[in-house]
Image (cartoon, rainbow, N blue to C red):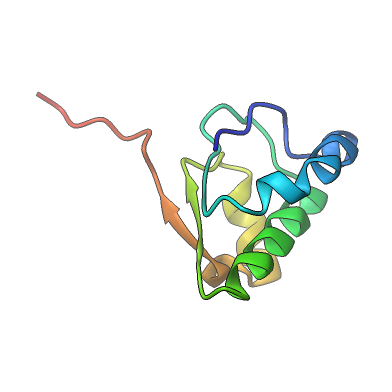
Amino acid sequence: MKLERELTRDMLPAYWAERATLFGADRVDLSELKQIDSVGLAFLVQWSQALAAGNKPLTLLSPPASFYPLADLYGVSSLFELVDNTAKSAT
């Protein structure tokens, strides 16, 4: 699953309307996002908790830089498996 709209307060109503579909995915590609705010982080936490009920982690692929300080501030980093796909190997 790839998210292409910013994960912010302004976009939450659109994401919330899609949550039944979104919360079924256990991997989400965030590489297109430039911004996640605290409301967007709370949405990801709810998504993670929905998956945790089935003993599945939520894997976040290439979260934007704004994700890391927020996740650390709120102490929720451990709720996610984080994969940085943006790093390219040098040849």
